[in-house]
Length: 375
Image 1 (cartoon, rainbow, N blue to C red):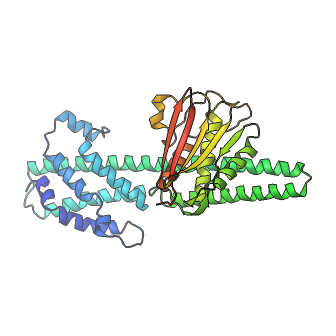
Image 2: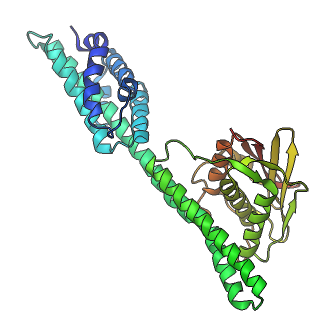
């Protein structure tokens, strides 16, 4: 039997024997067969299909040299498998071992059906090894890309999200030293404690995200909260960092709901920081919150040059950086391209949506729609 036909006829047996090996690589937990075999059936079928395709000498050379993105039919299954293994916590060595075991399993089982090796069988074996090598190359490349993104996101979040509360702590500490009013001392001390607590929560979140390799998105813990209080606290924090900037809050009602207050404070901090960095210096930053049916509509508006139309589709991508036309002389903030990405992820985790509207006449407004009861 030709090797490609053998693979198609024995997908179940190959997957079953390979599953035993896969179970030795994963953490000491119980995983279902579907999890252990994730993607292997598709990889085998695509390898068999590749072996049946006519291949010129030029194509064979390109494949042997690892010509990137040349054989899409193998790349898809291998990449999906690699991404699934990233989420499960496997190392690159373990993922590579899976493909080595797959190669050995197929060849061993195929040998049992052979009496002699002829030229056709040798050709099949060469094509099979080429296909396995191509799948392994694409899986390893996708695994490395995902891990690099995770590291970049981790370091960027650490610098981005701790910068504002740390600046507030320093500002409140300086005012505490200059102030001589006991009541003011107590107020500043409470603000310092609040900012330090936020930093602690962020560090905890970063550790959690690192453990799951950023594979499951941001987790939230909804509880009864007041949107007006969230907005007020976020604005007060930003005022302490940027005392020369003007902030306005338009929120008549308390607007209660069920949200993760710490995470929404992070959203507002990021949106306010973005407005300060990219908005006109001599105009206020306005925060509005209002009730609309079963939602609360939260918006942050700044005047200034509009966002170029061509970059709007990428605005919420991780590590995307936009240019600021105007920046305050004493504004030492820097952009790592994470603030808007993180804000959108948090709003999405609440079951809401984050959008942006921008024009030269109306300025720029980020609008978040939040269900009053989180999903």
